[in-house]
Length: 309
Ligand SMILES: NC(=O)c1ccc[n+]([C@@H]2O[C@H](COP(=O)([O-])OP(=O)(O)OC[C@H]3O[C@@H](n4cnc5c(N)ncnc54)[C@H](OP(=O)(O)O)[C@@H]3O)[C@@H](O)[C@H]2O)c1
Image (cartoon, rainbow, N blue to C red; front, side):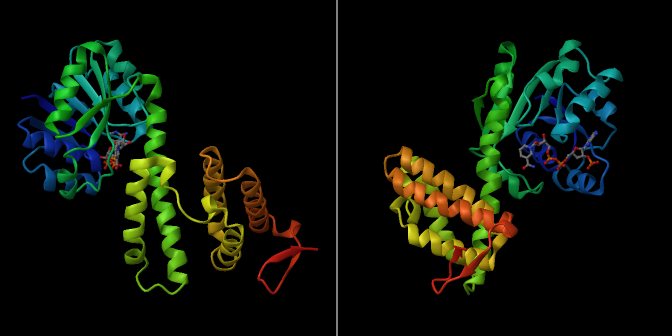
């Protein structure tokens, strides 16, 4: 049983503390000023006293620093400056981007730095607790502290994955590119379907996207289907016309993803470079039309396409 303090009872801090408490650790106190943080302490950590960050840090053996990434360095420096962190104390953050360097102020006075990033999205409510089971945690620690960090992740029912200090930002970029941009992609797809008359765009997309995600996770590029990999230039051209008319703000992301898709299909040997070049030319033209319409003067033809004059 470890005496744990939480600085930042945010979405992650309150949930991880609740899970560690359920695993038998003592949560000595939690800091958070906003109403949202105070509500999370009341809901997820009933009976745990609130406190100032310095008081929380002084009373625990393991300090969970769950503040926004950009605040981490300042908060650690402030806590060390106030004498609230002591040698031998564990100081653990949950940022994906940062490794141990951001905790240098604490390490310099003999505290033990840990980085433990859950590869999961949090709502800050009880629904997150069940999702922790099987969640991968990107972890970084000094050699002597690896066992402690592994046992912390195990208590959270997570799976530790060691990430080298200099690769944490890349690790985090991979997660953000996949999870965050997926949300934007799906939102844009739902808008297009709604504009096409689909009554329930989410229900229409769910089976297709679930299958595509499963296939991509299992087979990578080999999972790709659709007009780009088939080299259906006219279908891509027609897409661009309709999206340009209905949702021009979606053109830049459609073009970026279609170009990346074409590149990967060529490298995979499934798309002839000559077909890819045709597709890329169409995509570049469509992008120019939405980004610099004054430079592309054109008229609509019967086929619904612009011809340069
Ligand atoms: N959200 C996710 O899905 C997720 C997933 C994995 C990892 N993470 C990582 O977990 C960490 C926390 O993220 P979060 O989403 O839980 O953030 P959050 O919900 O915004 O909560 C941040 C917490 O930090 C406190 N705080 C902010 N500035 C502070 C300061 N200067 N001094 C002391 N406390 C301060 C806030 O207190 P007040 O309420 O009083 O402002 C709040 O309790 C970040 O490193 C993030 O990258 C987040």
